[in-house]
Length: 485
Image (cartoon, rainbow, N blue to C red; front, side, top):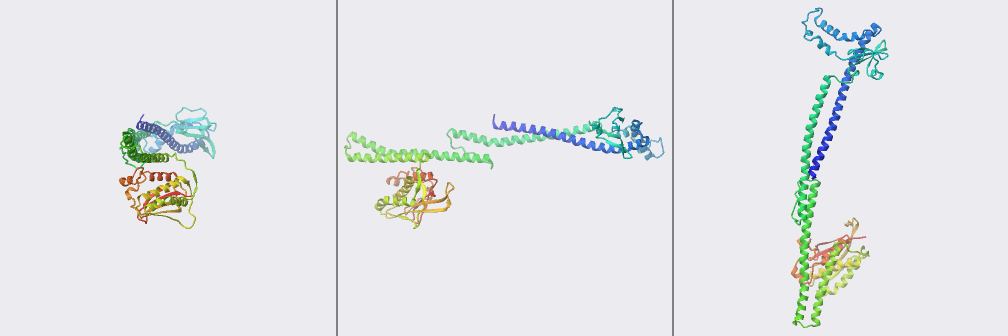
């Protein structure tokens, strides 16, 4: 079942349960409140009847004739009202009260009245149903006591005190209230259901677009871009999906470029070896040591290229094992300078180390891999620096910095040169494998575009990074920033 259908069913279930519970609760609350209202009105009437019946008992000293007395109350009220309006003109039915029949006046005083003596025996009941029976004490507790000279002589119950069932008028009132509540509940439920369906569509629509785009990506199409029109979690998911497809496109392009570059780099030595061997077989080239030495040099270059690719793949896959120990980066820099002094002298390049008088910083790293970073950076600087230029190395630390692992203290190894520098638009790609700013010149110089890629990945394996910028010598500045102790 699709998500939209499940959400719709869920909304329907929630609305039905909520509406039924609300309807039952409101109906019960309304009925209870209405019964309380009716009971409070009957209690007020019972107080008046208790005073009247107290006077009756005081005059008769018993409850004899109480049944007749209660039944005559509406008639006596009618006569009293009639006399108060018409005076002594008895028999003349021309006053305002004459417009109302006796039955109408009786209906105004139609409350059921029950009177019980001290023993609980019903001595008067306007309906005649309970006359002579014994009323339970727990029911009499709801009534109002009838007192004479501060002594209780009986109990009077009016309306709902006798029978908890409501009258027809009251029942019709509750029915109309319940109907109104029911229709209001149905209307609000339909409105809530409509809003729920709209919400379900709003939620599932971008998910459907994501699903469609994901299917296209799974089929090999990396072009889909999911539109985002909100700022919720689904929009964040869409942005993450777009970022993922963008990264996949970049990786796909990088993979194609790597395959093409690797094929190009491998083709040259392989073609050279193949042509030389074929020429020797055909007798064009004599089988001489010098020819074999040239072929051996090409095989060495081919082997180094393959080893570099394998090393880079090992580092990127996370399989590189680092032998961490406390190392002195200044010692590594000085040793590297001594190893490259002859090569720098051949191009009349001034190769120097700048350091303070205080003991240099130390860090936890793999000595050989850290040396490889420094060797690659120096080799790259010497390769592209013109004759008679300068290459300067320095080591520094900054305790205020925080590295990628959240540790304080960063050791920086900088290699600056006075060469042509690196354009800003090329700096982000300079660490990609096989990438060269000037392919023809780099190939003439023997570069394969792997040294900086390897150095960058080794720095990342140590929790650091290599940054590229400009220096005061006028050329490029490569700075390896590694976590210190």
